Image (cartoon, rainbow, N blue to C red; front, side, top):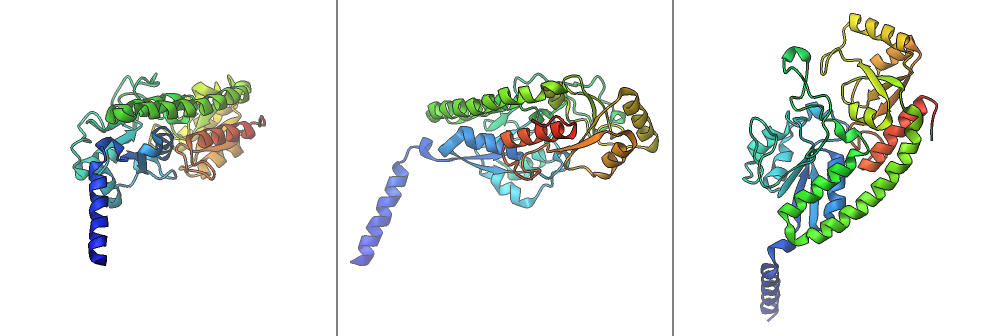
Length: 313
């Protein structure tokens, strides 16, 4: 008798699940980097579960293609990515192995298919190269892809994610729109506050380790006039460093921005020889303590820069 009752209960559960509309299921979303995952969770709400490929402490140009990432992509309904080829060292290879018909890759784009959500759509791209020669270092053919370090570009990212989720799951469009409005209300309030913070930075000159802060410069008004790297992805030579020291002294550069993933020794040496101060920033969320969201990462980076030059908010 007890067995019959249990069987009947299981059948009831089975038919209840089978009767659920397809739109009621949770979408499996994979984000390439943590802050995209954060925003996808905020916009997707209860309708999505989100996995992330890169760890925040990694260099996005050298993300390890761990075998554990393949099943995530194989069952994913969507991939949220920065685009502009910044994930080209790991995302296409993982997609090829994952063999998901909705998420493919080709020689031009990291992700091609119904489930691809490119967060760079509509971006005002900076630093589009005039030459694609390998002699210029690690360049991106469609322009600088590091727009995620510009706090204001969080608006574009969130809107592109919402548009992608609506395209994939139109039955919940109203929910995605509601979640987007709530997120943008929070982000825009922060942007208004941050713009007041960075007003004293306008026109200040600085150098960075890698050529990945041009969008941050656009937001803060900082003029990044050089990099510690000789060229993108190319280690500095003694001659280059000597020239950089002379340039910084000549231009009275007070700030060196070191991205968390790079060795601190060279920026510290440069600071000792020029009197400039070093600010450590994250180029992905979770790179540094208490930076697990896009908003927290953005605020940390701005505070680090302002503190370094004695203008803490």
